[in-house]
Length: 337
Image (cartoon, rainbow, N blue to C red; front, side):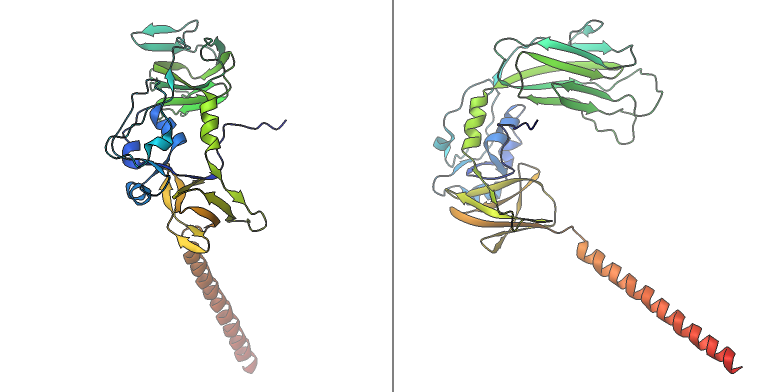
């Protein structure tokens, strides 16, 4: 079977709804999650350069939201907001009960303590309240580092919690490369009637469970407002992506390509300076109209590496030639003698 996620955004798309990094850093969970879905998060100077252009919707300043479930108005009415931006979450906080209240667990203050005395995982299901069914569910929990666990093998004390196929891992705190991932976050779109939970670990302490829902219709509306990139498969190959995109105003193109040095972007044959969007991905500005886009990637240091390799080959060739010449001279000298 081939499954399609109807909520997934395009890999490359245009948006004129911008939020500055400064404001984004002021948002708490889950507002920061919704902000990434609703806006292209760009450097402050990029917001300033685009805001004021016709039809754009930008959010600047230090506004924040408590995530109280207030439904925001149309973003198009928030053009070029300055000062405290009116960002309001469309998510609703819900009570789904203590989904980690299982047999053998104890409640120590606000901490749910689970001790696994078996050699396998803990697997169980929890029914969801009617108000959550059919909604997109966002969960966040804090998982404490394991303590007082017998150290049989270093790294075997990882804690993993999988909910409806979405897995988070907290590595053994004594491991050299521990990830310090104490906050487990989940976005679950297949919330029909229950949560299927798998817990891996021996000593698990969990607290601070929060749950929010988002109406999938709202997400579909957000996706519908995006202008998707149309790839040109005849010109797309190896490390180059070509295609076109239509912008109905000045704004930004966001991609799912992880930001790093080495990207070159041309718009209608002209080089543009790429920027980091959504805190981690490649993006670049475009003006209103239809544009031809080319994105290329050259690994940093590739040219220098090729040059060093070429010099190395030349040195090896020189040694080989010298060795051959010296060998011939030596043999000729022996014959003459």
